[in-house]
Length: 183
Length: 183
Image (cartoon, chains in turn blue, cyan):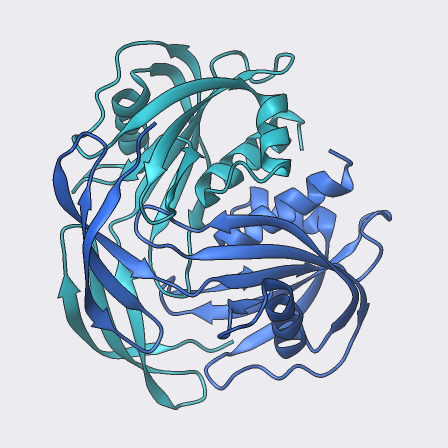
């Protein structure tokens, strides 16, 4: 399968969080067109298990956060953007500490995802944290979050009831549930 | 938990696919700040089973597509934006037909997700299609796609190997695999 080639790129918006480019692109059939792309530095997210993930119905830490874009409070796993020069693992450890106050004995990579590749290059590196030590959280000034601890069996029921709607969070939970099942 | 309130909204970019707003917002602590938001009409996506999903290792249809933002060919389930006035179910049926040429005896809702609620209101309604009748696909002019049929067991191995990276696709597969397992 052939690919598309960048001919030109123009930054049409540069903001606090988002940068929007319009690229002129040659498509696989030779035609030329424009594509709008949100450029993103990438992010890490981590599903924290508060008890042995191989044990009977382990406890999962989630954060409840009002998300303006979604116009509702949603459940998410701790996550945030990579800082310049930061590795995905270091970012996952930092976000876990900032958002939940926890440190972890083990932080393992699960999978890396594109959130919505039709219009952004945003990649999220997903991790699983175990062996937690609880501390005090230190969220950023514009974060208004609450940490909750819920058994995995209940988290899976919440997914079925449509109560967990965040993409990265759904993937981490469903993947870790399968991982735990030894798939 | 309190919420954030919109004070003002300015459209800073209006494009072919993306619209970018900067909203002035009052946060839960009473402070005022700006948030950048990509406004999106919403989308549907559908995981098509080419054989009985309750059967032994059912076949899944996936599309391979070069995604410019990801700079690679990625596997995805059929998906696309809602047209004005279109229901999520009608959109799922239309995208399934356009991208794979298939019609389905049954199209059932699975779950609705926010792809990346930190900076966009994009919602994707996920469906599962069964009882497929194969026809000729009719992709849009800027879509360069190939339809492949893969056993679910192999799709799950591809996820473990990091070969499936699209968020909505991961959720639909992992959810449908659990659904099939009767969770």
